[in-house]
Image 1: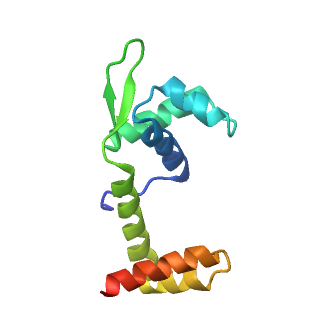
Image 2: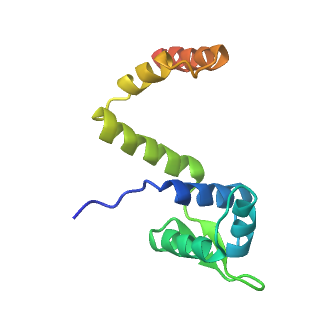
Length: 125
């Protein structure tokens, strides 16, 4: 049996970003937010939120008229875990090849490269 993963699917992450941004939300609120960007069914949002609750990412709280969902862990904690899992899986636990790849990518602006260099210099102190 595979160990439990903190990694969220693309759709789960999209949904969690809405809830992290608002701090708490009903299924209807998440649905209304997501449908401004893409076509999605209300029942799909409801199902995903129930799955996220069963995975331990969300917790239900009683609301005035509907159940409210709140994130169990802060976004930064979940993202850190996802990045660590990605580095472990793709780069055998070493972040260096990932950093080299990012530095070689043409997608980094000069400002982003400078900021990354500052972070690297700070870590070396």
